[in-house]
Image (tube, rainbow, N blue to C red; front, side, top):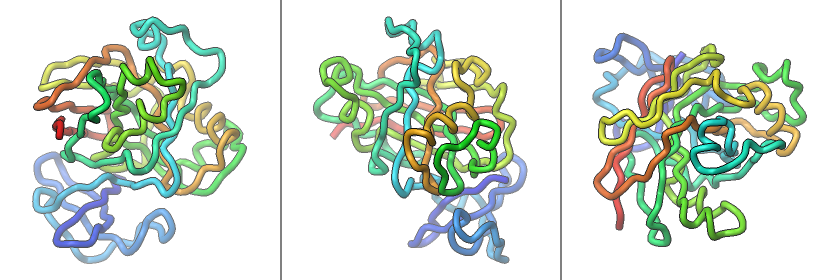
Length: 258
């Protein structure tokens, strides 16, 4: 099931996206699916007639996982960490499909990172790996934008990873997905730059959910960004970057500088 968050006139709504590519419809659901479940109404819209928003604005946090693909670690001259390398991005970093990525004035080297993102569905702590599926609401595409120059000079990654618009998410949340071997691709201005698979992860989805939950209490709507495959590069004003993940869809954002 594909759960989207969208706007028709004013207030954001949630809906279920159904149909073949190019002819999808979105059925409005009552309230917030994270707390009310999925209760369909009789109101429907053509997908082309609505504006998709980020499928979730996390109520507390986005958790990133650094260097979870060996080839990506190597391309930046880093070793694979012995312990999970976790960092936080504020919920103010989240934007949705087609929202502009705004390059921060303090950086000249912002790079893209296409990633599978896990959306948490219930409050949880110290989740055993074998119970991870019980706390996952679904999956979406993400772009963990990183100010590389600032990442090198700051002692921690809050500015480099957490600036406004540094976490595009979308286009929707897929609630039923076999995440073991999914294609993850990133395209810069239509050119394929990243082409990996979730089977290349050093730590898989269930292990990551368990690890993260032992560090932080997870709340409904929290997002875990699971790492990026090799091929990262820089974005510039006027670019467009697209993340495409098998079984979910495509997330596309333009790049601007104010």
